Length: 472
Image 1 (cartoon, rainbow, N blue to C red):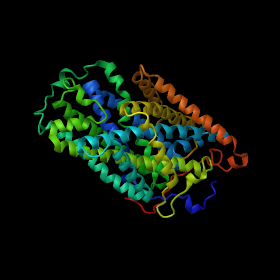
Image 2 (cartoon, helix red, strand yellow):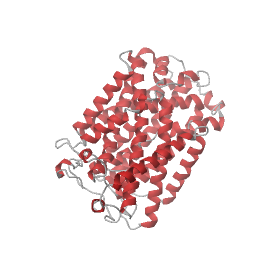
Image 3 (cartoon, rainbow, N blue to C red):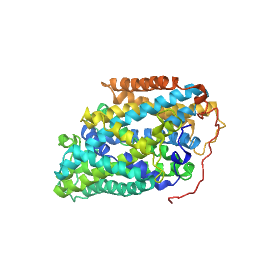
Image 4 (cartoon, helix red, strand yellow):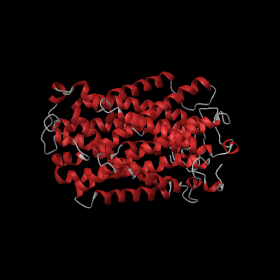
């Protein structure tokens, strides 16, 4: 185990289902999903709702698999912990665990860079103040500062941001549908005469964007060591979160397309921050400012959750000496894994230096995410057959996970036609990460590896009922 004193490497159990819900919505309801959804509506018209249904289903099934594994093995490492606990050979378990977690970490850097660009672009367009770089710096400083201050404060701020960003998106759709915008009364003929103008191919082409609209529901699982009764609060918070996201997206899209048909004005639905243009057309300058604030809240909320969840995966590996031990440092007062937070923030800002296109960054990250989701489904199914005796505080029928695998393969096949190289790049990322893991762990003595818990050492990890500092 890592050499720090126990008090320097322990997290604190302090949040309940409200925190899980806020984490799920806060990560999913991002400026990239704001922009991505409008790009999807512009390309496929109302047919994008079908793509959203596919994305919703995929991510709900993925969320269930993550929750099953997280409550079986309630440790902060998430995909690292799941993988490590699914194999009995220690070296295999550790190599695969570290490799998949590193690939997952790097993939998130692409999505987060896209989020920085989308949120900062929205602020520049809506306020006319500053530059994209300045707003990215502001977002980073606030998100890092809140997470360093402790998870309870970060979650409290996240709940406020969730209310703002969900409220504004729903009101946009309702205001347009009620005829309160400058664009005039709604015309619902689009939904009855030209629901899918581009046909199935147009819907398939934006399925990756639709999947991305719900990606991140599983990001509450790295917080499992800090969630009170995770077997109950993870599923409850996650289900409430995903239903809220679906409702918000459908209401917003239905109302806005009824007054601004993407068939007549497809150009306003494209770009890194189309929500600002659309808000300006509908509600003038005040609309631009309000939606700009909501976009800022969305980006800040997303980055707060990312800087809360992902560093805890890195922290968990470092705690077991599988990454440099300083990454396991926890602040003695706030209990925040401060070193992992700072290193993650640096990594997540690198891809934006090479690409400024939000949709490109999103599609690249989704390809890797889908591959990671296939892996998690496979782990959940494997453990049902190899270790049915394990305690499962939350579980679903195995057929649910098989359906999830089929849907992901369908999305990879249809959504990436013409760009299968992104899938190849994703596979290479996993391969290189595992190769790095092989090399890194080769320097470890067998005695060091033997101190790391795998499935051989801990068959059952019961859901804790620690009630210290409950949120609810």
